[in-house]
Image 1 (cartoon, helix red, strand yellow):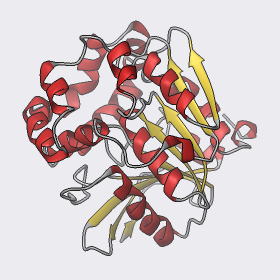
Image 2 (cartoon, rainbow, N blue to C red):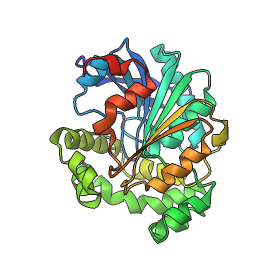
Image 3 (cartoon, one colour):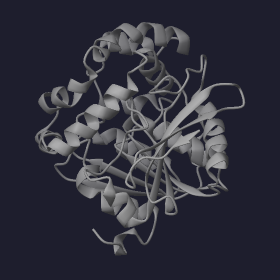
Length: 305
């Protein structure tokens, strides 16, 4: 099922997967453009985009496709899911949309899922982009060195529990976010550094973020708790086997995912070009979207701004 919207999107669609679950997705930009699959953050949804004006995708010749992960937005939950289950859903979506090859772009907590797609589909994923991503917990020294004392006791305890127990432990931690998710951008403005406050202070950015947070949490805190629980466990595949070129963008003043974690992730990837932005924060993509999409879909830089 697909419902057309404006030329700039989002064009909404739903797909019934082989196991009976519904997968919801949105498309932005040029339907005939260069495909880029988005792996949204956590919490977030298919409404996540990285430009203030969605018309930029059409002008750049980009077809940006973003599915809701299980339990987020309008996608059905998938009890007991793993990070490595996600590529199976993506394959069915790409086949339905007639997309043979695509770049993959992730923001924050979507990094594990983007890299899982690259690992599982080396013949279909052409390149990977990671915005403010962290490494898997297989290298615990990275987390303990970069985040000493910064993880709440509840979260630290959750890391050592099985995934389902972790989800149950984290659900009440994230439940308050579901009360008024549209206010999350304003909360982040107060909590994050000056660079992120400046970005989130722009009305178009704040509106876009409020919409994707609200939609992502429409089913409650369960999907978010599950997502975070999975990121605290081994992801199920070795990063050393990701053969595609990975571009990583990270602000040195990212207070959500400290740059030290980004440096560890970059070091673990065999083919990685890391872009470090001095003084910038977690949402730097809104100031650098043209560069980001140009790296994943060469030729974007030659299109109209």
